[in-house]
Length: 471
Image 1 (cartoon, rainbow, N blue to C red):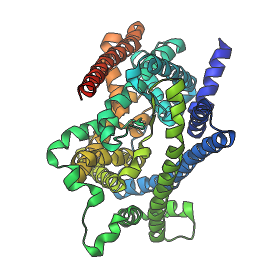
Image 2 (spheres, rainbow, N blue to C red):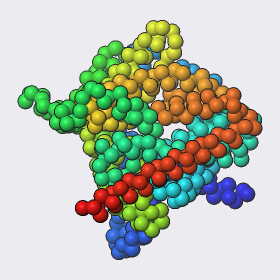
Image 3 (cartoon, helix red, strand yellow):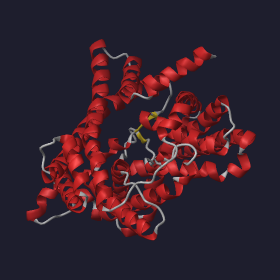
């Protein structure tokens, strides 16, 4: 038993926990299954891996600035993030092994479900979110069943997480088809519920054809805003300079000194903005590089191992479609969150911690999906909804994780809140020994959904065949 446990933990830590390795191995397997030439196989697998590495380098470049930005903004708003008796490090020290086992068992179950049910369509490949979804699920299960042993937590958590991996790309499919009509890959990110809500709310407010962010007509003097790198640098620079002006000089000085002790805070603010724009450019380059390899390579997996499947990938994979919409969403979500921060603090309800990384990725993604529904109006609506959900979700969920890892509430994407509160809602029904109802219900719902989808697809195929024959 220990050997199996060690193997599963090794896979979780060294394959699923290392996104470049995971994507590289999937690309390698796909090319081998297509019997590509040796040199093409090696080069393709390495290009996909390097593309993901470049993507993460871009993320590291601008998230470093976002962390400093977050600290300065909190100072400018005169707020102090809430304190927790328990930390995420404490939780992972106790349950980290359980989380690792959940990732591996859940992915194996997900692969089996996708293999058995063609309607499942997508293989979830966002490695770092496999970890976070599993961590949130284990923390929620520990909350409703504190006496459960590790085996119970692993099997119950894995069943629930496997259902999420399978269904999440499917409920995003209608929106993704508007972004990627060729359906080459799916969307695997924990911003999905906010994206769906944006798609629904934005419908009456415009159309992509009339209001597309990428086709906005600007006066000649402002035409440089059409360059996403330029607009990103300018917008972040303005926000940073305002934050520096309002923040405590000591806090700003510490952040600037971390980059270079001789830097002026004002120059530091400009450099952070420039690094942010540069990081986005690097990220988008990495996305294009690894997509160019994994999408055609995955055909080998789709043809030979799991027929008809496509990869479901991280949020940045759609950012190149409408980078201006991404910035609309990010700016709107940040502004909305900061307004909520001020209102909550004034009311004495809760002191929010600005989650700048989540505001960028979730706000950017919902801005993009809002754009495909209602153009720039939809992008703004997506950003506003993101800011509201992340603010209210953080305030409400902090206490829910008070005995496990409250930081999960501050680091969260919208789907994390949905998972936590869904499991909390069934607490009176499934607490203690009845926690086994969680994976049973989740997997049963998954199977029923896939059977219904399969029948619907079969009918659509039959109608198409009849129509073709009549012609």
